Image (cartoon, rainbow, N blue to C red):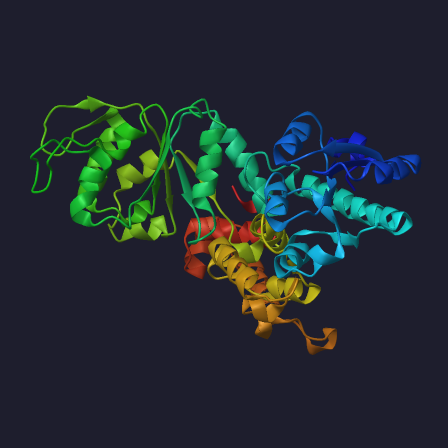
Length: 454
Protein backbone atom coordinates (compact mmCIF):
# COMPACT_ATOMS: atom_id res chain seq x y z
CA UNK A 1 0.00 0.00 0.00
CA UNK A 2 1.35 3.43 -0.96
CA UNK A 3 1.06 6.08 1.73
CA UNK A 4 -0.33 9.58 1.25
CA UNK A 5 3.15 10.93 1.90
CA UNK A 6 4.53 8.85 -0.97
CA UNK A 7 2.07 10.38 -3.43
CA UNK A 8 3.29 13.90 -2.65
CA UNK A 9 -0.33 14.99 -2.24
CA UNK A 10 -0.87 14.63 1.51
CA UNK A 11 -1.74 18.30 1.98
CA UNK A 12 -4.40 18.28 -0.71
CA UNK A 13 -5.89 14.97 0.48
CA UNK A 14 -6.57 16.54 3.86
CA UNK A 15 -8.07 19.76 2.49
CA UNK A 16 -11.64 20.82 1.66
CA UNK A 17 -11.03 23.40 -1.07
CA UNK A 18 -13.59 24.37 -3.71
CA UNK A 19 -13.18 26.66 -6.69
CA UNK A 20 -16.48 28.39 -7.51
CA UNK A 21 -16.96 29.97 -10.95
CA UNK A 22 -19.72 32.58 -10.55
CA UNK A 23 -19.92 35.19 -13.33
CA UNK A 24 -22.72 37.14 -11.63
CA UNK A 25 -21.56 37.01 -7.99
CA UNK A 26 -24.87 35.45 -6.96
CA UNK A 27 -23.47 32.83 -4.59
CA UNK A 28 -22.14 34.94 -1.72
CA UNK A 29 -24.72 33.61 0.74
CA UNK A 30 -24.19 30.03 -0.40
CA UNK A 31 -20.43 30.37 -0.10
CA UNK A 32 -20.81 31.65 3.44
CA UNK A 33 -22.95 28.66 4.37
CA UNK A 34 -20.42 26.25 2.90
CA UNK A 35 -17.58 27.88 4.79
CA UNK A 36 -19.45 27.52 8.08
CA UNK A 37 -19.44 23.73 7.62
CA UNK A 38 -15.72 23.54 6.85
CA UNK A 39 -15.29 24.20 3.12
CA UNK A 40 -12.83 26.80 1.83
CA UNK A 41 -14.30 28.51 -1.24
CA UNK A 42 -12.32 30.52 -3.80
CA UNK A 43 -14.21 32.51 -6.46
CA UNK A 44 -13.47 33.04 -10.15
CA UNK A 45 -15.56 35.19 -12.49
CA UNK A 46 -14.70 33.55 -15.83
CA UNK A 47 -12.33 31.11 -17.56
CA UNK A 48 -9.40 33.54 -17.52
CA UNK A 49 -9.85 34.17 -13.82
CA UNK A 50 -10.10 30.40 -13.31
CA UNK A 51 -6.71 29.90 -14.98
CA UNK A 52 -5.12 32.43 -12.64
CA UNK A 53 -6.45 30.55 -9.61
CA UNK A 54 -5.17 27.22 -10.93
CA UNK A 55 -1.70 28.67 -11.56
CA UNK A 56 -1.27 29.45 -7.85
CA UNK A 57 -3.23 26.59 -6.27
CA UNK A 58 -4.37 23.02 -6.91
CA UNK A 59 -8.10 22.35 -7.11
CA UNK A 60 -9.89 19.10 -7.85
CA UNK A 61 -13.44 20.17 -6.98
CA UNK A 62 -15.43 22.98 -8.59
CA UNK A 63 -18.85 24.66 -8.51
CA UNK A 64 -20.09 26.32 -11.70
CA UNK A 65 -23.04 28.68 -11.85
CA UNK A 66 -24.40 27.50 -15.20
CA UNK A 67 -25.41 30.66 -17.10
CA UNK A 68 -25.14 29.33 -20.68
CA UNK A 69 -23.55 26.31 -22.47
CA UNK A 70 -20.86 28.35 -24.23
CA UNK A 71 -19.60 29.80 -20.96
CA UNK A 72 -19.62 26.31 -19.40
CA UNK A 73 -17.57 24.87 -22.27
CA UNK A 74 -14.92 27.58 -21.81
CA UNK A 75 -14.68 26.70 -18.13
CA UNK A 76 -14.54 22.94 -18.74
CA UNK A 77 -11.67 23.40 -21.21
CA UNK A 78 -9.38 24.97 -18.60
CA UNK A 79 -8.60 21.89 -16.50
CA UNK A 80 -9.92 18.36 -17.25
CA UNK A 81 -8.96 17.12 -13.76
CA UNK A 82 -11.53 19.18 -11.86
CA UNK A 83 -14.75 17.44 -10.77
CA UNK A 84 -17.47 19.97 -11.61
CA UNK A 85 -20.87 20.35 -9.94
CA UNK A 86 -23.30 22.65 -11.76
CA UNK A 87 -25.76 25.08 -10.16
CA UNK A 88 -28.52 25.60 -12.73
CA UNK A 89 -32.03 27.10 -12.88
CA UNK A 90 -35.06 25.28 -14.32
CA UNK A 91 -35.19 27.29 -17.55
CA UNK A 92 -31.55 26.54 -18.42
CA UNK A 93 -31.99 22.90 -17.38
CA UNK A 94 -34.67 22.39 -20.06
CA UNK A 95 -32.24 23.25 -22.89
CA UNK A 96 -30.84 20.26 -24.78
CA UNK A 97 -27.30 21.71 -24.91
CA UNK A 98 -27.32 22.03 -21.14
CA UNK A 99 -28.52 18.48 -20.65
CA UNK A 100 -25.78 17.11 -22.93
CA UNK A 101 -23.04 19.03 -21.11
CA UNK A 102 -24.31 18.04 -17.67
CA UNK A 103 -24.59 14.35 -18.57
CA UNK A 104 -21.15 14.14 -20.18
CA UNK A 105 -18.90 16.43 -18.18
CA UNK A 106 -20.29 17.10 -14.70
CA UNK A 107 -20.13 14.99 -11.59
CA UNK A 108 -23.57 16.25 -10.53
CA UNK A 109 -25.91 19.26 -10.77
CA UNK A 110 -28.16 21.12 -8.33
CA UNK A 111 -31.19 23.19 -9.22
CA UNK A 112 -31.40 26.77 -8.03
CA UNK A 113 -32.19 27.77 -5.34
CA UNK A 114 -29.74 25.31 -3.79
CA UNK A 115 -30.54 22.91 -0.97
CA UNK A 116 -27.33 23.47 1.04
CA UNK A 117 -27.58 20.26 3.03
CA UNK A 118 -27.92 18.17 -0.12
CA UNK A 119 -25.09 20.10 -1.80
CA UNK A 120 -22.68 19.49 1.09
CA UNK A 121 -23.41 15.75 0.84
CA UNK A 122 -22.65 15.84 -2.91
CA UNK A 123 -19.44 17.80 -2.30
CA UNK A 124 -18.30 15.16 0.20
CA UNK A 125 -18.92 12.35 -2.29
CA UNK A 126 -17.22 14.20 -5.16
CA UNK A 127 -14.23 15.02 -2.97
CA UNK A 128 -13.83 11.37 -2.03
CA UNK A 129 -13.95 10.22 -5.66
CA UNK A 130 -11.41 12.89 -6.65
CA UNK A 131 -9.07 11.75 -3.88
CA UNK A 132 -9.30 8.10 -4.94
CA UNK A 133 -8.63 8.99 -8.58
CA UNK A 134 -5.62 11.10 -7.65
CA UNK A 135 -4.21 8.33 -5.46
CA UNK A 136 -4.77 5.72 -8.17
CA UNK A 137 -2.99 7.84 -10.78
CA UNK A 138 -0.09 8.44 -8.38
CA UNK A 139 0.23 4.70 -7.75
CA UNK A 140 0.10 3.95 -11.48
CA UNK A 141 2.87 6.44 -12.23
CA UNK A 142 5.11 5.40 -9.34
CA UNK A 143 8.27 3.70 -10.59
CA UNK A 144 7.66 4.42 -14.27
CA UNK A 145 9.91 7.46 -14.69
CA UNK A 146 11.89 5.45 -17.24
CA UNK A 147 8.82 5.29 -19.47
CA UNK A 148 8.54 1.50 -19.10
CA UNK A 149 5.26 0.20 -17.73
CA UNK A 150 4.94 -3.04 -15.77
CA UNK A 151 6.28 -4.79 -12.69
CA UNK A 152 6.48 -8.39 -13.86
CA UNK A 153 9.69 -10.34 -13.37
CA UNK A 154 10.56 -9.97 -17.05
CA UNK A 155 10.05 -6.20 -17.10
CA UNK A 156 12.03 -5.74 -13.92
CA UNK A 157 14.93 -7.45 -15.67
CA UNK A 158 14.52 -5.25 -18.75
CA UNK A 159 14.41 -2.12 -16.59
CA UNK A 160 17.57 -3.27 -14.81
CA UNK A 161 19.36 -3.86 -18.13
CA UNK A 162 18.31 -0.46 -19.49
CA UNK A 163 19.77 1.22 -16.40
CA UNK A 164 23.00 -0.77 -16.81
CA UNK A 165 23.61 0.15 -20.45
CA UNK A 166 22.09 3.65 -20.75
CA UNK A 167 25.20 5.42 -19.50
CA UNK A 168 27.54 3.41 -21.70
CA UNK A 169 27.94 4.50 -25.32
CA UNK A 170 27.84 0.95 -26.70
CA UNK A 171 25.60 -0.42 -29.45
CA UNK A 172 22.58 -2.34 -28.13
CA UNK A 173 20.54 -5.11 -29.78
CA UNK A 174 16.94 -5.44 -28.59
CA UNK A 175 15.25 -8.73 -29.46
CA UNK A 176 11.67 -9.86 -29.02
CA UNK A 177 8.45 -10.61 -30.80
CA UNK A 178 6.72 -8.00 -32.93
CA UNK A 179 4.72 -5.52 -30.89
CA UNK A 180 6.51 -5.97 -27.57
CA UNK A 181 7.63 -2.34 -27.32
CA UNK A 182 11.22 -2.49 -28.50
CA UNK A 183 11.22 1.14 -29.68
CA UNK A 184 9.95 2.28 -26.28
CA UNK A 185 12.90 0.52 -24.64
CA UNK A 186 15.30 2.14 -27.11
CA UNK A 187 13.84 5.55 -26.25
CA UNK A 188 14.27 4.81 -22.55
CA UNK A 189 17.95 4.00 -23.11
CA UNK A 190 18.38 7.27 -25.03
CA UNK A 191 16.50 9.33 -22.44
CA UNK A 192 18.71 8.01 -19.64
CA UNK A 193 21.95 8.48 -21.58
CA UNK A 194 24.31 11.44 -21.89
CA UNK A 195 22.85 11.92 -25.39
CA UNK A 196 19.35 12.61 -24.09
CA UNK A 197 19.37 16.27 -25.19
CA UNK A 198 20.30 15.29 -28.77
CA UNK A 199 17.96 13.73 -31.38
CA UNK A 200 16.45 10.25 -31.16
CA UNK A 201 15.79 9.12 -34.75
CA UNK A 202 13.89 5.88 -35.50
CA UNK A 203 14.01 3.99 -38.81
CA UNK A 204 12.02 0.88 -39.69
CA UNK A 205 14.42 -0.93 -42.00
CA UNK A 206 11.71 -3.31 -43.17
CA UNK A 207 9.31 -0.55 -44.23
CA UNK A 208 11.63 1.32 -46.64
CA UNK A 209 11.91 0.08 -50.26
CA UNK A 210 15.34 -1.50 -50.89
CA UNK A 211 16.08 1.03 -53.64
CA UNK A 212 15.64 3.95 -51.25
CA UNK A 213 17.06 2.72 -47.96
CA UNK A 214 20.68 3.68 -48.67
CA UNK A 215 19.62 7.25 -49.46
CA UNK A 216 17.33 7.22 -46.41
CA UNK A 217 20.12 6.19 -44.06
CA UNK A 218 23.14 7.97 -45.54
CA UNK A 219 21.57 10.84 -47.52
CA UNK A 220 22.29 11.85 -51.12
CA UNK A 221 23.78 14.63 -53.21
CA UNK A 222 21.88 16.67 -55.77
CA UNK A 223 21.63 14.75 -59.05
CA UNK A 224 22.62 11.43 -57.50
CA UNK A 225 19.58 9.78 -59.11
CA UNK A 226 16.37 10.73 -60.89
CA UNK A 227 14.34 12.99 -58.62
CA UNK A 228 17.29 14.01 -56.41
CA UNK A 229 16.86 17.74 -57.05
CA UNK A 230 18.78 18.79 -53.93
CA UNK A 231 21.15 17.48 -51.30
CA UNK A 232 19.44 15.55 -48.54
CA UNK A 233 20.89 14.52 -45.20
CA UNK A 234 20.27 10.93 -44.16
CA UNK A 235 19.11 9.56 -40.83
CA UNK A 236 22.67 9.03 -39.59
CA UNK A 237 23.49 12.73 -39.93
CA UNK A 238 20.07 13.71 -38.54
CA UNK A 239 20.85 11.67 -35.41
CA UNK A 240 24.45 12.90 -35.06
CA UNK A 241 25.20 13.53 -31.40
CA UNK A 242 22.18 11.43 -30.45
CA UNK A 243 20.79 7.96 -31.05
CA UNK A 244 19.73 6.16 -34.24
CA UNK A 245 17.23 3.34 -33.67
CA UNK A 246 17.28 0.76 -36.48
CA UNK A 247 14.13 -1.33 -36.10
CA UNK A 248 13.77 -4.66 -37.94
CA UNK A 249 17.53 -4.76 -38.54
CA UNK A 250 17.19 -8.41 -39.57
CA UNK A 251 15.46 -7.28 -42.79
CA UNK A 252 18.44 -5.19 -43.94
CA UNK A 253 19.95 -6.34 -47.24
CA UNK A 254 23.49 -7.77 -47.29
CA UNK A 255 24.76 -4.76 -49.30
CA UNK A 256 23.48 -2.34 -46.67
CA UNK A 257 24.91 -4.52 -43.92
CA UNK A 258 28.40 -3.90 -45.37
CA UNK A 259 27.85 -0.13 -45.30
CA UNK A 260 26.48 -0.25 -41.77
CA UNK A 261 29.49 -2.26 -40.61
CA UNK A 262 31.79 0.49 -41.90
CA UNK A 263 29.84 3.12 -39.98
CA UNK A 264 30.18 1.13 -36.77
CA UNK A 265 33.89 0.55 -37.32
CA UNK A 266 34.96 3.98 -38.60
CA UNK A 267 32.12 6.38 -37.64
CA UNK A 268 31.94 7.68 -41.23
CA UNK A 269 29.31 7.60 -43.97
CA UNK A 270 29.20 8.40 -47.68
CA UNK A 271 26.16 10.09 -49.16
CA UNK A 272 24.74 8.54 -52.33
CA UNK A 273 26.40 10.27 -55.29
CA UNK A 274 29.44 11.43 -53.30
CA UNK A 275 32.69 9.62 -52.44
CA UNK A 276 33.72 11.98 -49.65
CA UNK A 277 33.54 10.62 -46.12
CA UNK A 278 31.39 12.40 -43.55
CA UNK A 279 32.12 11.81 -39.87
CA UNK A 280 29.11 11.06 -37.68
CA UNK A 281 28.81 10.71 -33.91
CA UNK A 282 25.75 8.49 -33.59
CA UNK A 283 24.92 5.75 -31.12
CA UNK A 284 23.25 2.72 -32.72
CA UNK A 285 20.44 0.79 -31.07
CA UNK A 286 19.06 -2.00 -33.25
CA UNK A 287 16.03 -4.23 -32.82
CA UNK A 288 14.66 -7.33 -34.47
CA UNK A 289 12.01 -10.03 -34.12
CA UNK A 290 14.11 -12.37 -36.27
CA UNK A 291 15.98 -15.28 -34.71
CA UNK A 292 19.45 -13.87 -35.41
CA UNK A 293 21.27 -17.15 -34.75
CA UNK A 294 19.18 -18.79 -37.45
CA UNK A 295 19.78 -15.83 -39.77
CA UNK A 296 23.53 -16.25 -39.26
CA UNK A 297 23.37 -19.98 -40.00
CA UNK A 298 21.44 -19.29 -43.21
CA UNK A 299 23.89 -16.47 -44.18
CA UNK A 300 21.07 -13.91 -44.24
CA UNK A 301 22.98 -11.72 -41.78
CA UNK A 302 26.69 -10.97 -41.55
CA UNK A 303 28.34 -12.44 -38.49
CA UNK A 304 30.81 -9.55 -38.13
CA UNK A 305 27.97 -7.01 -38.16
CA UNK A 306 25.95 -9.06 -35.68
CA UNK A 307 28.73 -8.98 -33.13
CA UNK A 308 29.27 -5.25 -33.73
CA UNK A 309 25.60 -4.58 -33.00
CA UNK A 310 25.25 -7.11 -30.20
CA UNK A 311 27.64 -5.59 -27.67
CA UNK A 312 24.77 -5.67 -25.20
CA UNK A 313 21.51 -7.56 -25.76
CA UNK A 314 18.09 -6.98 -24.20
CA UNK A 315 15.48 -9.68 -24.75
CA UNK A 316 11.95 -8.30 -24.34
CA UNK A 317 9.44 -10.83 -22.97
CA UNK A 318 6.16 -11.33 -24.86
CA UNK A 319 3.04 -9.95 -23.21
CA UNK A 320 1.68 -13.45 -22.50
CA UNK A 321 4.62 -14.00 -20.12
CA UNK A 322 4.16 -10.71 -18.23
CA UNK A 323 1.28 -11.63 -15.92
CA UNK A 324 -0.68 -8.68 -14.57
CA UNK A 325 1.32 -6.23 -16.69
CA UNK A 326 -1.42 -6.69 -19.29
CA UNK A 327 -3.89 -5.07 -16.89
CA UNK A 328 -1.48 -2.30 -15.89
CA UNK A 329 -0.87 -1.46 -19.54
CA UNK A 330 -4.59 -1.60 -20.35
CA UNK A 331 -5.44 0.76 -17.49
CA UNK A 332 -2.73 3.15 -18.66
CA UNK A 333 -3.99 3.20 -22.25
CA UNK A 334 -7.59 3.57 -21.07
CA UNK A 335 -6.73 6.45 -18.75
CA UNK A 336 -5.15 8.33 -21.65
CA UNK A 337 -8.22 7.74 -23.83
CA UNK A 338 -10.50 8.90 -21.02
CA UNK A 339 -8.86 12.32 -20.91
CA UNK A 340 -11.27 14.85 -22.35
CA UNK A 341 -13.88 12.25 -23.38
CA UNK A 342 -16.49 9.97 -21.90
CA UNK A 343 -14.99 7.79 -19.19
CA UNK A 344 -14.74 4.03 -19.57
CA UNK A 345 -13.51 1.39 -17.14
CA UNK A 346 -12.65 -2.30 -17.44
CA UNK A 347 -15.08 -4.79 -15.94
CA UNK A 348 -13.80 -7.69 -13.85
CA UNK A 349 -14.99 -10.01 -16.64
CA UNK A 350 -12.92 -8.09 -19.18
CA UNK A 351 -9.86 -8.29 -16.94
CA UNK A 352 -10.22 -12.06 -16.57
CA UNK A 353 -10.59 -12.47 -20.33
CA UNK A 354 -7.50 -10.32 -20.93
CA UNK A 355 -5.44 -12.46 -18.57
CA UNK A 356 -6.63 -15.65 -20.32
CA UNK A 357 -5.79 -14.39 -23.82
CA UNK A 358 -2.31 -15.09 -25.26
CA UNK A 359 -1.81 -11.73 -27.09
CA UNK A 360 0.00 -12.85 -30.25
CA UNK A 361 0.26 -9.18 -31.31
CA UNK A 362 1.61 -8.25 -27.86
CA UNK A 363 1.39 -4.66 -26.56
CA UNK A 364 0.51 -3.24 -29.98
CA UNK A 365 -2.52 -5.55 -30.17
CA UNK A 366 -3.53 -4.65 -26.62
CA UNK A 367 -3.43 -0.94 -27.40
CA UNK A 368 -5.54 -1.41 -30.53
CA UNK A 369 -8.14 -3.52 -28.72
CA UNK A 370 -8.43 -0.94 -25.94
CA UNK A 371 -8.89 1.86 -28.49
CA UNK A 372 -11.56 -0.12 -30.32
CA UNK A 373 -13.38 -0.96 -27.07
CA UNK A 374 -13.35 2.67 -25.97
CA UNK A 375 -15.14 3.61 -29.21
CA UNK A 376 -17.56 0.69 -29.44
CA UNK A 377 -18.60 0.58 -25.77
CA UNK A 378 -21.79 2.59 -25.25
CA UNK A 379 -21.82 2.21 -21.48
CA UNK A 380 -19.32 3.15 -18.81
CA UNK A 381 -18.00 -0.40 -18.39
CA UNK A 382 -16.01 -2.33 -20.99
CA UNK A 383 -16.99 -6.00 -21.29
CA UNK A 384 -15.13 -8.88 -23.00
CA UNK A 385 -17.21 -8.54 -26.19
CA UNK A 386 -16.08 -4.90 -26.58
CA UNK A 387 -12.50 -6.19 -26.65
CA UNK A 388 -13.35 -9.06 -29.00
CA UNK A 389 -12.40 -11.50 -26.20
CA UNK A 390 -15.77 -13.04 -25.37
CA UNK A 391 -14.37 -16.50 -26.13
CA UNK A 392 -11.65 -15.99 -23.51
CA UNK A 393 -13.84 -15.54 -20.46
CA UNK A 394 -12.53 -17.84 -17.75
CA UNK A 395 -14.41 -21.06 -17.03
CA UNK A 396 -15.43 -22.52 -13.71
CA UNK A 397 -12.53 -23.69 -11.59
CA UNK A 398 -13.50 -27.39 -11.99
CA UNK A 399 -13.15 -27.32 -15.79
CA UNK A 400 -9.39 -27.83 -15.61
CA UNK A 401 -6.50 -25.72 -16.93
CA UNK A 402 -6.81 -23.47 -19.94
CA UNK A 403 -4.96 -24.39 -23.13
CA UNK A 404 -2.29 -21.78 -22.33
CA UNK A 405 -1.84 -23.14 -18.79
CA UNK A 406 -1.56 -26.70 -20.10
CA UNK A 407 0.96 -25.61 -22.72
CA UNK A 408 3.09 -23.91 -20.07
CA UNK A 409 3.02 -27.03 -17.87
CA UNK A 410 4.11 -29.31 -20.71
CA UNK A 411 6.76 -26.82 -21.84
CA UNK A 412 8.28 -26.67 -18.35
CA UNK A 413 8.25 -30.45 -18.01
CA UNK A 414 10.01 -30.96 -21.37
CA UNK A 415 12.59 -28.32 -20.50
CA UNK A 416 13.30 -29.88 -17.10
CA UNK A 417 13.72 -33.33 -18.65
CA UNK A 418 16.12 -32.03 -21.31
CA UNK A 419 18.21 -30.24 -18.68
CA UNK A 420 18.39 -33.42 -16.61
CA UNK A 421 19.40 -35.63 -19.56
CA UNK A 422 22.11 -33.20 -20.63
CA UNK A 423 23.36 -32.39 -17.11
CA UNK A 424 22.47 -28.71 -17.58
CA UNK A 425 24.69 -28.29 -20.66
CA UNK A 426 22.79 -25.51 -22.38
CA UNK A 427 24.36 -26.02 -25.81
CA UNK A 428 23.26 -29.67 -25.82
CA UNK A 429 19.81 -28.74 -24.50
CA UNK A 430 19.34 -26.16 -27.26
CA UNK A 431 20.36 -28.69 -29.94
CA UNK A 432 18.06 -31.37 -28.55
CA UNK A 433 15.06 -29.03 -28.41
CA UNK A 434 15.94 -27.50 -31.82
CA UNK A 435 15.85 -23.93 -30.51
CA UNK A 436 18.38 -21.10 -30.53
CA UNK A 437 20.27 -20.24 -27.35
CA UNK A 438 18.39 -16.92 -27.23
CA UNK A 439 15.09 -18.80 -27.18
CA UNK A 440 16.44 -21.25 -24.61
CA UNK A 441 17.51 -18.40 -22.32
CA UNK A 442 14.03 -16.91 -22.61
CA UNK A 443 12.47 -20.26 -21.69
CA UNK A 444 14.79 -20.62 -18.70
CA UNK A 445 13.65 -17.23 -17.43
CA UNK A 446 10.01 -17.97 -18.16
CA UNK A 447 10.03 -21.21 -16.11
CA UNK A 448 12.26 -20.00 -13.27
CA UNK A 449 15.43 -21.89 -14.24
CA UNK A 450 17.34 -18.58 -14.16
CA UNK A 451 20.28 -19.90 -12.14
CA UNK A 452 21.22 -21.95 -15.23
CA UNK A 453 21.06 -18.97 -17.60
CA UNK A 454 24.65 -17.91 -18.03
